[in-house]
Image (tube, rainbow, N blue to C red; front, side, top):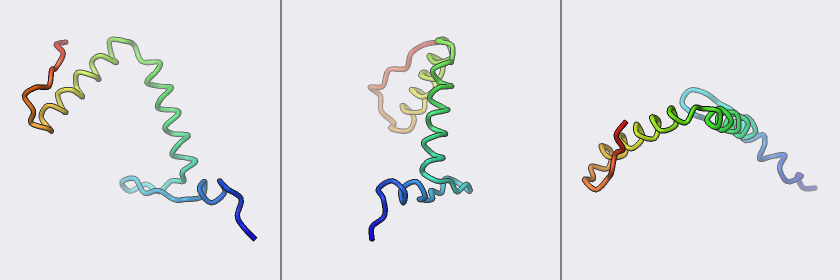
Length: 70
């Protein structure tokens, strides 16, 4: 007797920090965050991009990374 595909995967637990969630909850949260980012104003999206570029340039200690000016 085998398990149906998807049943076991949905019940898998994932630990993120001090939080334990199921795969289904993880994907639902990711979708909710994706929709929230899609609703962001363009100016805020560019600001977030610039912040990520700054983090990436410090993290990798690379000199060839271009950081946009705000």
